Length: 163
Image (cartoon, rainbow, N blue to C red; front, side, top):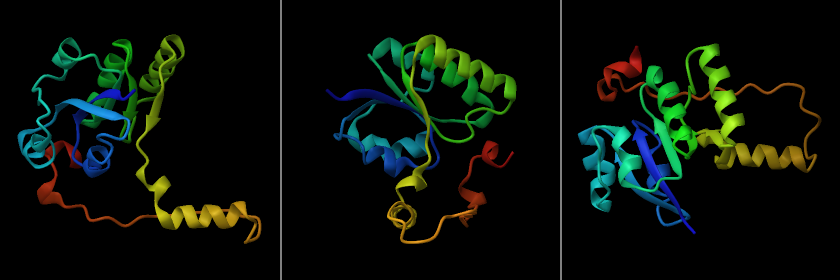
C-alpha cells in the first residue's frame, strides 16, 4: 500500500521527491509557491494549498515532506506529527536546542518516524567509498571530512533562504 504524502515548502530536492511518485508514495497535496508548483507539480494534477494546515482536513495523509523556511520548520514538524504523519525534513530540523528537545519528546510520545533529507547518502561516489570500507579494501579510517561545493544561486533563492 502506498503512503499518502504531502510536501510543505521546497526549493530544492524536488526531483528526488517527484521521482518517488508511484514508487510507494502517492503525492496527494503540496503547499509551495506558485512558480515551484507550476514547474514541478502542476503536471501531476496535485492540488497546491496556500495554507498547509488545510491539507490534512482534505486528505488522509500519513507522510509529510517538509522543506519550508527554517524558522517555521519546528512548528510544521510538530503539527504534522501531531496529526499522525511521519516526517521527512530538510536540514536544519529546527533552529534551537529547546525546539529539538520538544521534537524528540513528540517523536517519543507519538511513536512517529522522523528522518532528515540527506540526499547524498545514496550518491554513487559515497556509496563506492562505503563499499570499499565495508569490504576492508582500504585501511581502518581514522577521519573523514567531506565538503560539497554548490552554487548559491542568489537570484533563484527566496529571501528567507539567505537570511
